[in-house]
Image 1 (cartoon, rainbow, N blue to C red):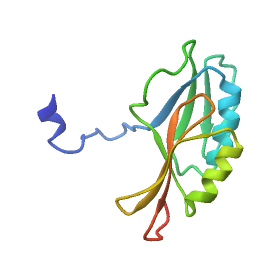
Image 2: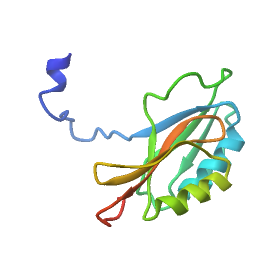
Image 3: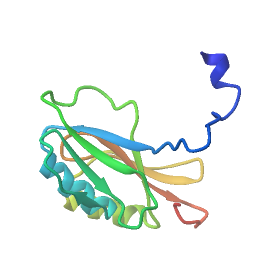
Image 4: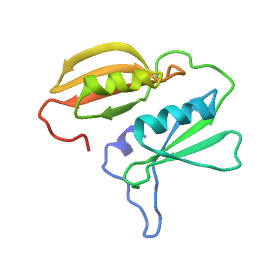
Length: 138
C-alpha cells in the first residue's frame, strides 16, 4: 500500500469526480454550527438530519465542513485540524475568543508564520495562522 501511495497522484476515469469534505465530531450540532459559521463565514445547509449538519462556503471556494453528532466527548489530541489563515493573528485570536474559543498554545513564530493553537467550544483544536511574508492565506 505505501508503495502505491508514493507513485503519484491517483488517476481517475473521465466522469468520476471526487469532493473533499471535512467532518468534525460534535455533541451539540447547533452550537458548533454557530461557532464555525461565525469563524469561517460559512452558511448552514438546513436539512432533516438529526446526526449531520453541513456548513458550506457561500462562495464555493472551500470544502464543506460537515458536523456529525456523536455521543462521546472529545478525548485526546486531534490527529487532524483546521488552520484558519488570516492577515492579523492577534485580531483573529481576540475575535474567536469572543465566539467561545480558548487559547491552548499562545502565538509563536514558526517557519515564517505566526500561529496559535486554539480549541473550539467543544475542545476541537484548530490553529490561527498568519504568514509573515504578507501573502494572503489562500
